[in-house]
Image 1 (cartoon, protein in one colour):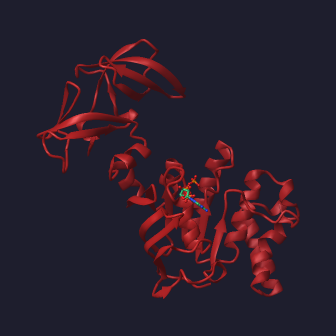
Image 2 (cartoon, protein in one colour):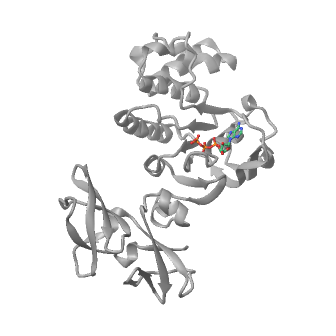
Image 3 (cartoon, rainbow, N blue to C red):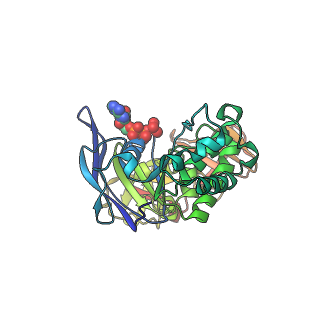
Length: 344
Ligand code: ATP
């Protein structure tokens, strides 16, 4: 298979009926990288993946494998493997036949097909199910067949479109680790589409966060998690509290509370801002003077998630190991270093 050092997307754009589903995506994928395309439903993730795969022609822009133009090639000549949400297995073929299919199509020698098929089946732990039909397997096992089928041809890039979203929560966690392990062991370059921020953060080397067809941020999990580029990324990455405020010199005023020591970045003094903080970063207790009333409590094992409200009616999400109950009045504080300030 044609391998590469970098795969470059240059202003990749796809329009449907005049509307941009994907607008000007610039991205460089390095060999061996695990890239997650992350964003809410309809943001253009699948469009980006299908443009890469060659299943959708570009409306504008280009794709390059090292120095060679790729977007003019049909899908089968790009040498990529694909794994879909709905598995897309051949129902009348055994696991073994499904996995070996791509090798047969490529005219690989019989003994070689046998060896590589065995190896792929072993990689996804399906040795005992090799003779079964897809209909005789669980969803998780079927997804493993789809993964084995994609990797058996040693593709230069594996494209995965929400491969775990049809699985139950426990299996999803297991398969996350398994895909990540497979990626490490085989050094597979992977582009993985998901709307699940935890999945993207835990699996990927770099994340591409999309919204309404446009890139919002490209960065490592740590960068995106700790320094979201704007309020939309923050919102999508778990900053559930987006509080209206006013910027002051080195501080932000939310309602009547002055939070000092918050870096306000490029925002000018007196400008309206959105102050973002994660529920787990809101501190309970202390003499901040911000009092809230707990309204709803959800049990999450060691912690509870609570929705509270300030006296002025501002909703606030909390996450704490303290045992709160509806009606409780508690004081909360915002550690300045945990508060991110964005232009409103
Ligand atoms: P999801 O997670 O729901 O699959 P997504 O982020 O993958 O969403 P896309 O499927 O890429 O989003 O769709 C991006 C936009 O393009 C959406 O507004 C969608 O309605 C539109 N779109 C996608 N495919 C087509 C199509 N074949 N014809 C018309 N519009 C389309």
